[in-house]
Image (cartoon, rainbow, N blue to C red; front, side, top):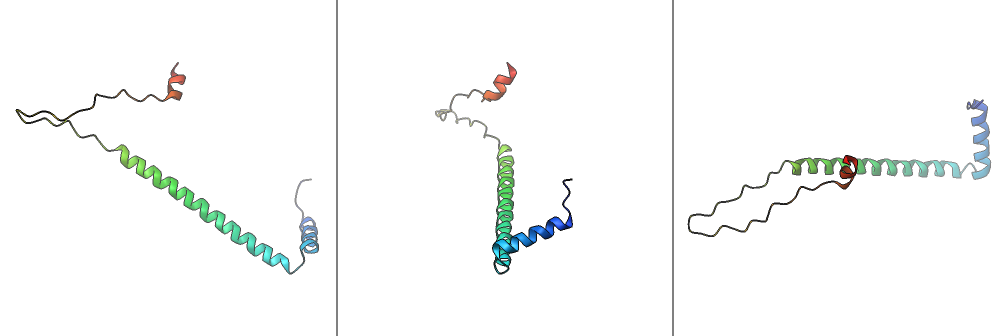
Length: 97
């Protein structure tokens, strides 16, 4: 029980021919093939986009901030922002507690 036997497929083909007609079945199969090809191409492009974003994120993670510059003697030092607090992920904070 539950196995697809050859006579099941034959009955399905006969029903499809009766419902749609012999002329419309090739067109329907062709359009289904085109749709599947489009879906496959879009899925592949989404995966490529995700891979590109991951590579860009890895490349940007390697950047180091420039060291603070010392002003020459007798000149005012350029403005430096105060050090920032480390960013803590709220999910990690909940897990730690």
